[in-house]
Length: 76
Image (cartoon, rainbow, N blue to C red; front, side):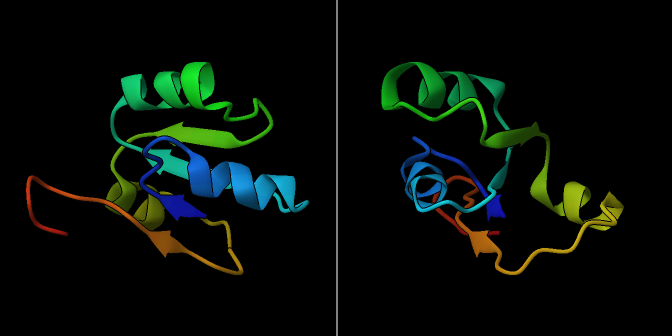
């Protein structure tokens, strides 16, 4: 699980190593750019929304959660 997608480099790297990857990204344009210009595979699941809300509402469990989200200059 990745909270914050960015260019999708970490997500793609984990996926390329055979891991099932889900990312939560607030901005749908970021996910589009990651897929179009940075080679994020379609098999990487991207949820569009606020990461805090997603975690509160999800019943899923994850082995590892990477936090890479920002609000301006600060990490929330």
